[in-house]
Image (cartoon, rainbow, N blue to C red; front, side, top):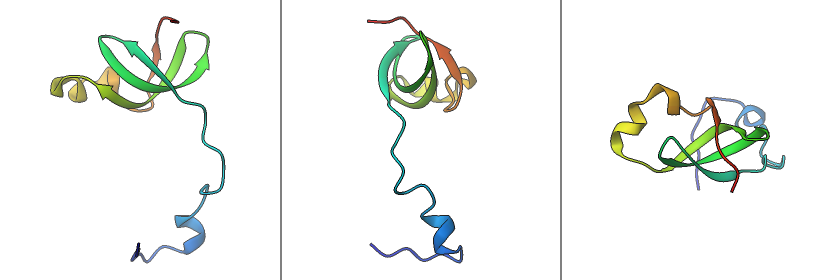
Length: 72
């Protein structure tokens, strides 16, 4: 892979070797999503997995938003 950029290599590769936060698949608001748990029953949205196209326009489902979900 070739990456052409005017940014310094240190900035491009920043955080590359760090471990990722643990992710969890949950259902909330009728949508299956990947979240990073922040508290019991709460998580920060990382990515939507199973949803309708209209859900991508819902501001409550933007990546980075904190949502409540039920444990399974």
